[in-house]
Length: 316
Ligand SMILES: [Zn+2]
Picture 1 (cartoon, protein in one colour):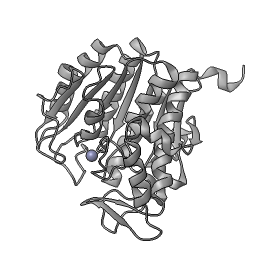
Picture 2 (cartoon, rainbow, N blue to C red; picture 1 turned 180 degrees about the vertical axis):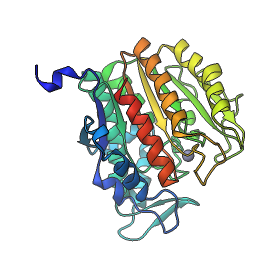
Picture 3 (spheres, rainbow, N blue to C red; picture 1 turned 90 degrees about the vertical axis):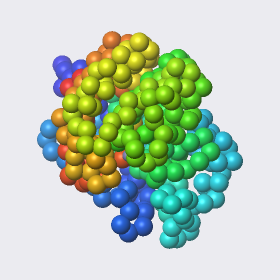
Picture 4 (cartoon, rainbow, N blue to C red; picture 1 turned 45 degrees about the vertical axis):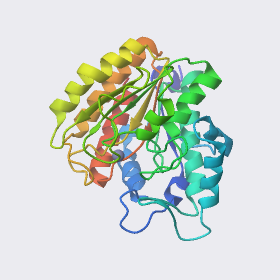
């Protein structure tokens, strides 16, 4: 048989040069070099089997799946012709931000379409800007549009996947995703994150309509506390939910090298969490997993962690 019939697992890597054109001011941690480091780590024979595609450009209307039309238009209007627009204290837009943000949405949508069609077993979007802090009508925390939330809506509306689970292991709480799905029992949101830390949300008592599962970690916590949070709270919740698709907000800023937080994970912890979520996806979701990059600000920690995550996806 042809070589492409032998491999049973195909991981789709969605990328695009436009993600480098979302510029941030000098010294900003969310910078194009993050993706250069990530792709450099994937530029080895080990990752040659990745199915690589450019992330398509989504319509602005796609963002209205989770954001108000007025908000989407306000972001479009905020894109400068040169230099930067400051949207909040730490969220900025540059001339290339609009296309990057729409391709980040496009990566999530294409990932969902690919796993729905069986073209890929799972998918990872190496995107910028990140999305999980973007609320229904508020940009914050480096995020413009909530790409993983839009992917969940797309799985439901385009593919009839009734229950979407979003697992968020970025070290910051995904207040935007929680906001969007706060009263929607068809989407589960489960997060480990450091508290106290930006954005300040994510207490265990924030439970939505029983669909929100927050497992905050304390500064200084490491592998043991992270894995316990998964074993005791996150994984049982996701299993009980029996998701039709598993979506991951894959931030890697809980890595011990990261400058923005004080959680001490290693790349092995991200591989472990990936493996555990793949097992649940195999059980309930026909293996369908779509993961989008969120944070991760130490270039070495980000690259090693993303590689460990993707390595696991490829061996699902
Ligand atoms: Zn983060």
